Amino acid sequence: MKALYRLVFLLSILSIPLAAQAQKVKSKAQLEKEKKENLNRIKQANQILQQTKKQKEASIGQLNAIKEKITVQTGVITNISREITYIQSDVQETEGIVKSLQKDLDNLKAEYATMVYAASKTANSYNKLMFLFAAESFNQLVMRLRYLQQYSDARHKQVEQISKVQAALTGQLNLLESKRKQKQNLLSKQIAESKNLQTLKVQQDSVINRLSKQETNLKQEVAQRQQAVKKLDKLIADIVREEIARAARAAREAGKASSGSSSKMTLTPEAALISSSFAGNRGRLAWPVERGFISQKFGRHNHPVLKGVVVENRGIDIQTSQGATARAIFEGKVLTVASVPGMNNIVMVQHGEYFTVYAKLKSVNVTTGQTVKIKDIIGTIYTDTDGTTELQFQVWKNSDNMNPELWLLRK
Image (cartoon, rainbow, N blue to C red; front, side, top):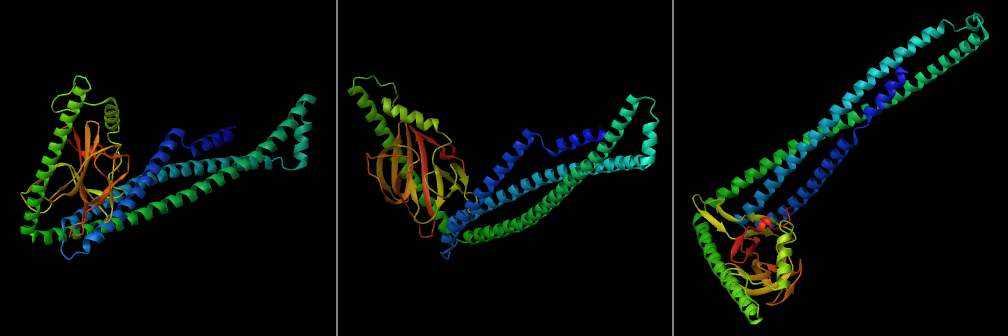
């Protein structure tokens, strides 16, 4: 019976608790998903970087593409480290199982040896007959016959248990060897990816040094951008103010008292529904480009090259591939199509009391008053002389400027 209990125990340790196993599977699936996403991001960044490298001079766009690759490469290394941690956990777990199996196998063999030794004393037929005929009654004779049969069966079962434990041990040893090889391969990959990261950082430093020699041009670009931002801000403010006033007039003409202030939209039931739906999808809205990365975040930031120079971004800049198109992030109505020096063509879409702005467009595919749906093409994004293709994207709620990154689906 001891051997049977031991076998049941071994079978139980060979199966990980379901909750823990499910958690591991989920975690590994997440790692696999992140790995694929990182590979796609690296591929996209490489394409964008190659376009900016076509120009002889270094550019901010080229620097941004390298920074994106560094960010993704760091993520790749982190992903590998997490994989190694999971495999090391598997290795330790398997080593524990191997140790238990080996111990039990030794015990089973020792027990079997004892049984064989005991059986050898009654191995010949004469001894068995003597044992049987020494019974004091017929019932005792029957009991002794059963004992001999059960003892023989126990020996056979012991052999079967030894075989099962040996098979389980072999399987776990093979699994352990496989896990150790996986770990070694990942460690080698981690070293290679770390070298790639160092190479990227050297490239980044090189581009920054080259850009530093273009200080006059960079300062001129910053000044031009700030002028363009001011013009765009004024245009947006004027359009929002006019739309708020128009909505208020329409409400009065319809005989409805305006519930909004001079800085808030008066919404029709339909517009209120769209506005509520837009707000309800915060953090889950579609990206305004199919592929790309955020090259400049929302708010005030130090210039990536010029020391002491602070730039302000009313939205986010999304760098993408040449020929890429801008897409509507949500259903709405095209409020205006205009042109602003330094921002090229711009399109403003209304979603109730929310507004989205798509700037730096080479061409526009929509007209004022047109209704657009999610992912409808707004226009083609402009590529500058440095080979940088970048969309300026903004989100407003009435007259309040908001951080678009908080509204878009996290990549």
